[in-house]
Amino acid sequence: MSMEKIVNLAKRRGFAFQSSEIYGGLASCWDYGPVGVELKRNVKNAWWREMAQTRADIVGIDCSILMHPRVWEASGHIEGFTDPLVDCKSCKQRFRADHVSGDRCPECGGELTEARQFNLMFKTFMGPVEDTASTVFLRPETAQGIFVNFQNVLTTSRQKIPFGIAQIGKSFRNEITPGNFLFRTREFEQMEMEFFVRPGDDDRWFAYWQDERLRWYLRYGIRRENLRLRLHTPDELAHYAKSCVDIEYHFPFGWSELEGIANRTDFDLRRHSEYSGKDMRYFDEEARERYFPYIIEPAAGADRATLAFLVDAYSEDEVEGETRAVLRFHPRLAPIKAAVFPLLRKDGQPERALEVRDILGAHFPVQYDQAGSIGRRYRRQDEIGTPFGVTIDHQTMQDQTVTLRDRDTTEQVRLPIDRLVDEIQRRIEAPFPR
Ligand SMILES: [Zn+2]
Image 1: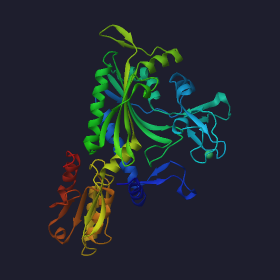
Image 2: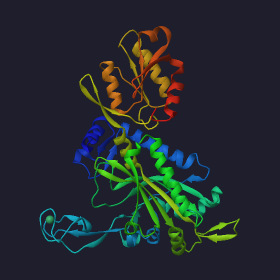
Image 3: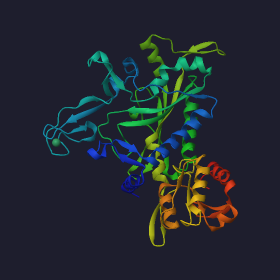
Image 4: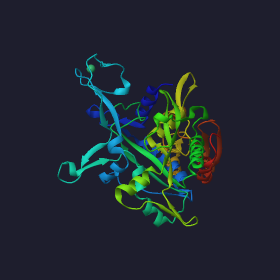
């Protein structure tokens, strides 16, 4: 299976379009279309539900993208969030120094400059004056908003260590080599949770979150053979991390990072204490001691996760000599939960089908389709991963029953209209794959 197939299907069916396409597009920026926005929102909701709402020991937050510039000094991003780059003196292209071998341009053979450190943060100006004093950055990670609010959350939520703060939001990194569709983009959405623990308990929680996060992907349908854990070698570790494990997914372009789980130690709170002059320590009432908590951070990419669910759900079937694409999404992630079809475009069936659409539509996203043969209508829905199809036929007009078809088994059952909502909701919540 190739990325090209995924990208084509995504465009053809409204999952994702290139940004500013009518102007030739903006490199590595994507817009989610009508079904893509539902898919991505469902992925984020699945994360939020399990990483914030249903846990007594985690609370949520939603911080602004622009932050005080001192934050990025304290975090080490001003100094350390850089890539060494070289420029070609002839064709002016720029490369990561560690991606070229020798001192010649890989594109044109021209002479390369010495490597220079290039900061990956996007800069802008706040207020009317464009000078150094008014420079602010688009956040390169959501985590810092959580750290600087540690005391606010602690006092307002009355949490005790160990506990976590979760956030979903946009981040920006001026990557030199973005690519692979939604995988690496300069503007992206993160799903990060910072879990504060007692120093000494950090190794145990680091292991705990690896298991939890791996299970989350499995629960929503990613196949086990397409996931693996990879421990970072000491030279790969970020300046703040004691250890880090990537959950990798087997994308068509190779094994790549889906999520990183890092032991950030007490680096962040210690630094913010130092730079802000505010005491960011935690007071442990039972032990009667004050300390900087260690932080275990599962940081996932919402766009990467969406892409992984899309890739993993993709399969092809042959029906009557014709190849069709089926997206076998977990019903909770599927953009549209059910499609409603009148078998015939007469005898009152379309009117009855529209009534059924409205009944279901009050509970979850539904589509109505009366165009073409019933087989073709099923195929259109299979391509966007709609798990259930409801058909209104001659018998419906007599006894108020409809057929309910399952995308994956293609099995059909007959049931009364007034039981449809409950039955579809039961199936959405059922363990997957069925
Ligand atoms: Zn060149």
